Length: 290
Image (cartoon, rainbow, N blue to C red; front, side, top):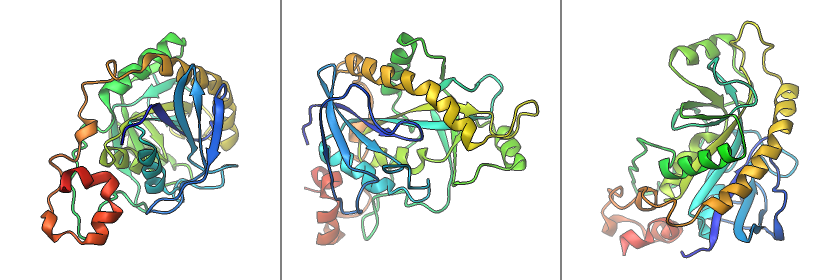
């Protein structure tokens, strides 16, 4: 599907809308996987078309386990979105990643257990490659935008996604640190993997709000602590998204393989796929099944 949207944004805790969005339109959508978390808001930043979706719903009514990740990503795909920016809160598992920093991770560890992780089932098997789950090209462009906005940006690191909605115990937090994890959050999985299945470039702008519960000289994480730090970083996030709209074009974000991730990933014989499954997933695989 051809689209003139420069990118889509999935906003998490603290980012429930986009300032400066001109010519706004809001509309309800439906997908074969149900309804997305919220209506999709479209508009323009600096003359560039963008789309926004509130991950946790209007008023933050959905816990991380309740988010319909498949519907959210599918809805963006229906719009023709080719690039997705995820904005989320996270805890730091490293002393050098401090509250107030913004991390653009390059790896992920999925430690969730209750979520639908794939679009593909019901007689259609797809093994998509996710060795490098975040789009490296889009990540570099995001880092550039953050630096131009004078953000305290940290490049790279592994984001471990826990089920939530509770925060970690000290035993869990210290275990994750011993595994080499850099930051901890509750929403990047399965979002990043579904974006890859939808052949959408995906990157996370993770706002460090706390040191989780491992840091002996800092208070354990609380909701109040998260909200206080996010309030300071929201302005940076808004300005960075506007800057990113100026930086992104097809030339500056070319060179990745996200847009053809399914080309050699479908293992099921097309003749064996049920017609209703083909119809349901045609948006994702139609070009490969003929």
